[in-house]
Image (cartoon, rainbow, N blue to C red; front, side):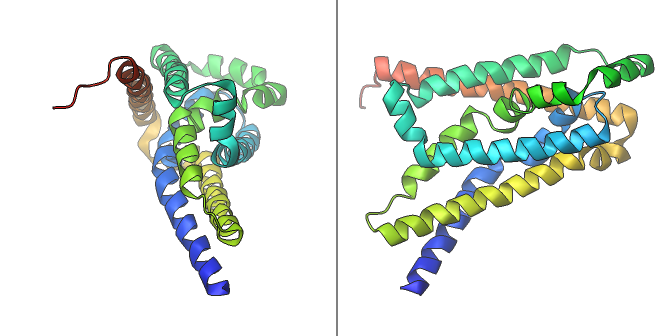
Length: 229
């Protein structure tokens, strides 16, 4: 029995880790974190990285365990979540693309304005949702949660435990990626960092549009089903 539970735990851990890590992708969102926290001190960025990782873990665990029940209760489909979340992602990416690079004087004034209180306000929106953990991640977590169901209580608990531990491991990776993002991008230099940030913002914009399109396509298929060939 113990071996069976350990096997169920390990399988669910690997399944959740492999399914959610590429979607959350901390390495890809770290440059966006840097851009959105322009002017913040290293200590504030460290605090933000910790808060974002904690928020992401709580949001993803909640989505995995009860997300499907919450959506059913309010009568909200995953397609609607994708459309709404995708619009937010695209809007945030557009702001990053159209924001001019700051001069040294502007950085100093922005650093003075980026207070710990402001950091706390932005820790969840937009830094956790939708930048670090968007609608695609939530939809994937809900799908993983449904896949972990089992009629046997012991196996069910082992599956849920494996999924939660996988999210905890991803949270640690997210914290490390955000905490040391500036150090990782330093070899690119200032010009290279700006180019990389612009490219990341453009990819984020495309991702937002793709999320919206996936949601709209699913809604259209529900209205006009494709006729069988």
